[in-house]
Length: 179
Length: 159
Image 1 (cartoon, each protein chain N blue to C red):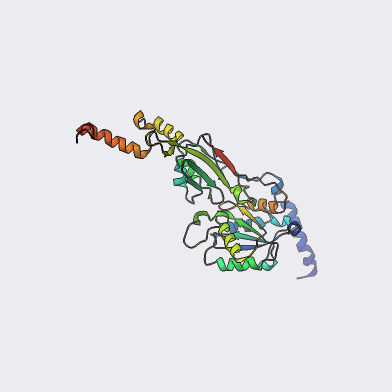
Image 2: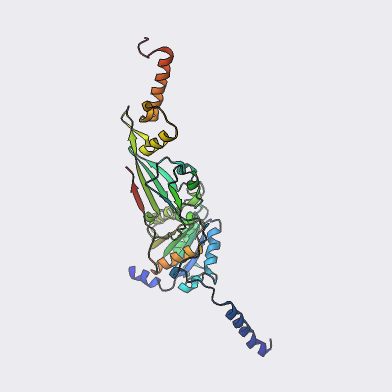
C-alpha cells in the first residue's frame, strides 16, 4: 500500500463515522427502548384473584404453583422460572392477571423472585373440615351456575354424598327406614 | 472479602459459560457487546479462560453432561468469584426445571458446590426468556453498584 493511501484511508473512516454520529445508548442512565408488544413480568391483583388455579394448569414451566396446606391455599409466582408467554392472562376467568413491560428483575437475593398470594379455604358445613375451595371461588361459581343452597357451602365429598342420598330417597323412599 | 468485592467493581472481566442453553441468551450477550449497547462502557470484557475472569455468565439449565465441566470452570475462577445466572433456565431451571437430564438452575448447583467445599462470593439472578440486552446491562450496573435494585417480593393475604 502506498504511504499516501495509508494516511487517507483512516481519515475516510473518520468522515463516515462523523456522518453516522453516536449510536451507543446510555441505557442504565436513561429510559430503555421497549416496544408496546414486549412481554414482561406479570402482576396478579390480590383483590381480584379467586384462587381457582386455572393459571397453574396453563403455565408451561410451572412458574405459577399452588401450594396447598391444611387450611391455606398459596399461589406462588416464581419469576425466575417464568418464560413470559402470558398464557395465564388468557386463561384467568376474572382478569386478575395483568402483563407489564417490566424486565429489570436482576437481583442478588433469590427470595426477591417470589410473589405470594395466600388464600384461606372455606370450612365445609357438614363435615367441618376445610374444603379445597376458597370463598371467592364459591361466589364465582354461584354467580355463573346457580346450584341449590343445600349444596353451596359443602365440600365436594359431602356434596356428592348428599346428592346421591337425595336421588336415592326420591327413587326408593328415605334410606334407613326401609330396612 | 467485602473489600475484595469492592475492588471488583472497577472493571469486570466475564467468562461466558454455556451449560446447555438454547443459544437465545448467548445471542443476547453478543448483542450487549455490540456498539449499540456497548457493555465495554463499564469495563466489561469477554475473556477466553475462567482463570482470567471475575464473573461467570452462566446460561442454560446445567445439564448432567455439562455439570463436571461447570464445576471445573468455577473452581478455576480466582476469588472473589461472582456467578451471574442468565435467563429463566439459569436462574430457576426454566421450562427444563424437572426434566431427567438437567439439575435445574443455579440454586441446585450452589448446593452441589457447597457439598464439595467450593465457595461462591455472590450470585446474581437475571430472569427473562431470553433476557433483553438491557437486562444484562442492568445486571452489570447492579454488580457495580450504579443502579438501585427494583425487584422485591410481594406477599398478599386474602381473607
